[in-house]
Image (cartoon, rainbow, N blue to C red):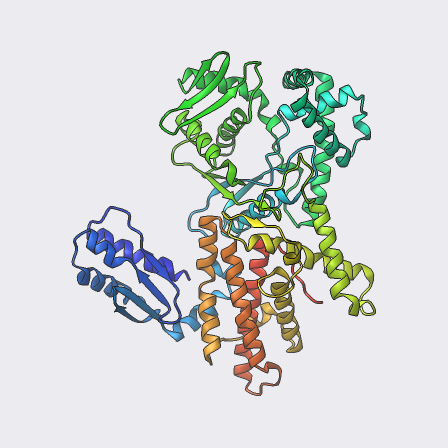
Length: 570
């Protein structure tokens, strides 16, 4: 049950009753020091609208008291409303909801969503800078799927542009056999050719010609281009598999996919007086929003902007979606905003269709600068994964070498390593930068993936000792609150739907991590206080086992959302 939604619903009714049409901010918070929920900001609304504050609060409380779940509602200065929940109602909701798949959490309205994420560079190995778009996108995709939306995943790779003209020119100039290239060799070619392009004008001129040839389907250039793409895709698939990311070849829609639509887009934008010709360059000027975007260069070559506009137009026409979600770093914030404005102005997509940009902060090096591929100063994702697995295997699994074989130790170490890497990033606020620190990845305590994974194994172990499992225990037992810590845990269980819906609405994964960590801390306290195995009172024992099973179910659902592997035993 989403109690915050009940409160919001009644606030909206009151605002409507008083004919308040303007949107005001108010807060509904969990504050267990004073009550279960607190409402802030109603007094502020009444002051601005010149409405009797006592009257508006009285009517709101009157409406809320109609719900059986609320035990007591009162006000404290300066106009904060305290809401208390009945213990019996909490028990009733938990016993009912825990038996339903995913606690019955789903959207009333099913959306059809395209989620555009990962988008790694071509001719480069995936590095630390690609981590956020990949795992954040996968996590948002998992939440949406859990809530019942139809998800179309898209991996929009940069496989069409000037960088290919540069690489192809270098390969031709140095007579490199593309069939004998691997990803490491391609990355060396990329770095060297980029430097030559910046330093040598003659080389740069040839590069532009080769870009144009590629865009005009020159056979030789197309052959080299296809080989480059294939090398990259195969390499990226290995990383996705290791990171437990649900992206495959069928999800790849490169920029080249839209190449035949670009001529029409340019002509149509000119026809609609959105784009103009300026000395053979075709661009879009917007004085109101203060931006200029070039969509075709003097030499006839198209840019990323042209592709992105064509891409949105095609996606809506083909899939008839409700919204498109993009995940890119914060540096593209203004650019994406402008692309959205152009597509709406050109009527390539209806106004009611949501175009959402979940931008994220950068992962920084120790000097607080984003990692740069061209200068070679980055950390490969493959290396991070390998290093983390090696560390965990060495430090934590020495004692198991006589119990488990090498393959099992590796499999468990890998699951812990992936959990550590992904949780480290997902627990950070999406919009903030953070400094990459390997020592923080390998911490196996506090707010980390391995700490949550281990809590789940403890739950399974405890249930096994008591001859039960999560599903059986939830279905057959009845839960009731018998002490203060159980009451706190129960209230947190009630908050689960609110957290999932909030993360879904805002594209924020750190909220789930924070919730999961707090729940796990209270489980550990509960676990230390209660000797359940030796408990004589059967009714009490079954109740406590059910509470543990519900915590286990929440951890399992949350780890699925975060894309973190589950450990059944260690």
